[in-house]
Image 1 (cartoon, one colour):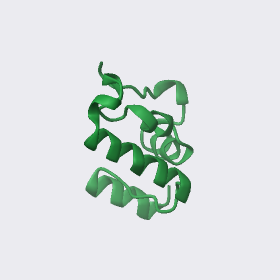
Image 2: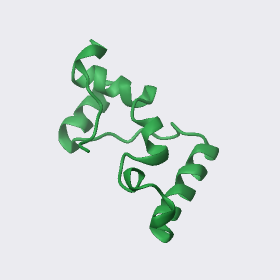
Image 3: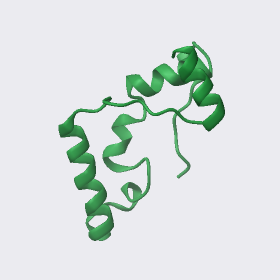
Image 4: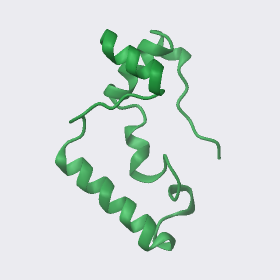
Length: 85
């Protein structure tokens, strides 16, 4: 992260990383969100809330991990990415 990124993260608690996902990935995620909203019963219960479903594959995306490794610790073993059941 740049010094600017660190300051923004410290102030807001998050950072926006533009153009990380491809147009195809965004379209796939959008379709999944609309399906969750319009036909929730068509989605397994464990995929009905974030970071379930297709979003699970992005929880350790390199752009996310870069921020976590910079903010938390450089040792990836010290970072746990999970959600309560």
